[in-house]
Image (tube, rainbow over all chains, first blue to last red; front, side, top):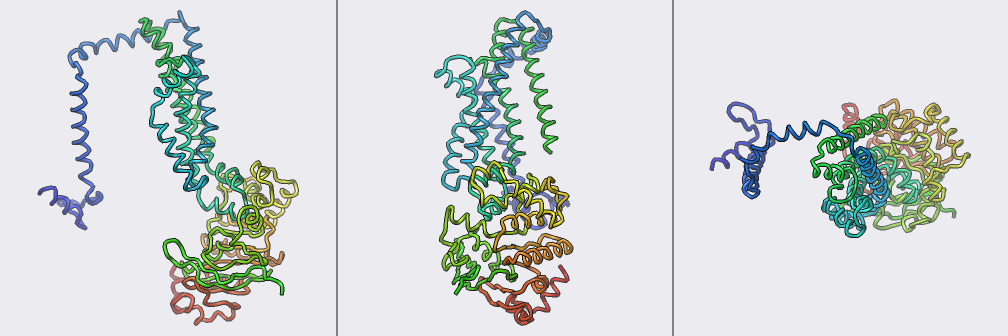
Length: 276
Length: 260
């Protein structure tokens, strides 16, 4: 077998190949080849399953430019509706993230092994792993059934996924706090709550801020999509405008989304810079 | 007969993986004693110190603080006993994002109600005491500096101030100078020695450096494989005694220290 010989050569102490010294990890070459072959096979299978009509696709490609051209010519006929929808999206994002932040802090502590102990922490983690595995739009659809169409369903549905996200990332941040720090506070007679408030939270605060900023960004883009499943906001405005072939209106809404997302990212970068 | 400040009564510790940390250790320490604990790595020096304030539990025997067995206590009583025992660590173990003052004031947490401590509601008296302590260790200019921004020697001084803030009767120092350069190490040892003497505080110091142990300690305990193999004044620590503790001739040990 050729590959067996290859493996032998690679695990040899000074694996020379073609006169050059092999600098990779011994036996590491097969993984990448396997990955590429696997990816190719899956791509072929997916294309076959979807049955994409390539001829029609090529025929329509020219329209993309035309649509963008139309969208670039903003129309202001329904600008009040667009702006109101945008404010809806903004409010949903802020409320969902802030509510989840508090819940995430509480559950994050319960999911951190060095805070809640080796029994409770894995159970809490498992519950939230399940919640996180279900995508946000599905949660929103489920909450739509309970609360009806509108922002309440959006906030609740988005919060489920956000709490699960915060629980996992905050628990990780708490677990990264060195055991030494906790030991020192235990040794001087601090209570469990004092150790959390005086040792664990201050040590983890930079990471908590970074995760919250990231989630604000994710939640904004999630919000933009959620409108399309009926949770209100800018997503609804975009899909309604496109359905009416009102490309100028849709273009304005998309531009607003882009502008806000861009400003938010710059803003958080600045915050991170001052936090060091 | 009055109980000594600290008494180990036939203490043994077996780790879950079967390693014997301490085996039948018995000794006692009186108020005001400065004791150095020496021994090779893995001899049980850290285990010894950490079983006093219950950062580690012992397997059998008793650790008595003024006659009370701390190894059986839990909850409120354990915290009250811990509050009376200060500890200084090799890696300082501060909360690095907080200020020097906040770190020093942590020394009062064991004496405060849980919520007052959580909210950082330290009394004015405690604040003044913390500032005075920092003045005493020449850190008066750094009250509001972030602990992360200090040098190693400065961090260890904050660790000392935090421990003294507890007004403990007993101070435990786990390799306090192992991460420091020689001049910082000397400053720290001088401070520990002078400050404990002034307050008539008992001090138990784990050390790697035999020279430092001989210079500062009034008494030396030598550990080897979890057993006390030497217990006496520094004058009695002969080359033969050093060989029993470290398992290699003292001359060879000196050579190694020079090289490293």
